[in-house]
Amino acid sequence: MRNPHNDRISSDSIGNAPERTCILSGETAVRDSLVRLAISPDGDVLPDVNARAPGRGAWIGVSRDTLEKALTKGKLKGALARAFKGALLSVPDDLADRIEIALTRALTERLGLELKAGNLLMGSDRIAEQARAGKVSWLAHASDASADGSRKLDQAWRVGREAEGSGLRGDVLPLDRAALSVALGRDNVVHLALTDPAAAQRVAVPLQRLLRFLGPAIETGQID
Image (cartoon, rainbow, N blue to C red):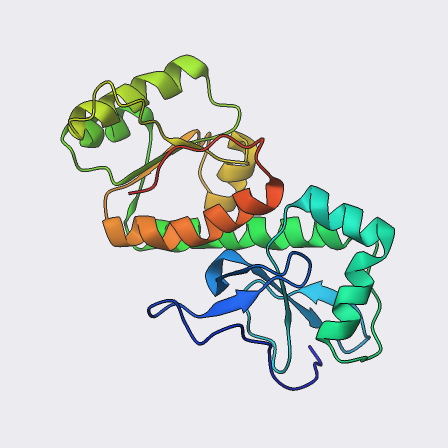
């Protein structure tokens, strides 16, 4: 993507995590929790969720609903014009869709990498066994998983973590079993788990960024 030089940086870091400023809300946050926008060679403003495009980028940390309202009212284009220092740009009408697709892809790609590394567990029986043994760091369910199946695994997880009565439960992913199955190349993927805490943290980054963009209606549990 073609961009003017340099990103706006609100401060060097929070600890070791760089901060960026949302061009719509004016709030600062850890970079990995925001979405970077960049300009394509054709002048279109597009998501750069992996923050790899050279030059200046603009960052947003608002929900999809807020973004679409800003796009309709012209506030987004004005904020982008300031962020890109007057560079010629065009904001696609489907920018929100493109961002959601890109964030979803980032999540599924990370899950795929954890699967290849041998960190991802699938299958209710296998997950339940590891959960009761206290070896599960992260648990998640497809959006269309049965309430009963999810409840049983959540209970096994609480038992293994000695957290009975805490209400701890797995994340409900913004992906149904069909989407998860396609992404991971497996049949009928309904429940997922990670035993490695470091892998759980790697998955947390794209997952929480996607959930933040989708808005507060998405139900989440806890990532350890």
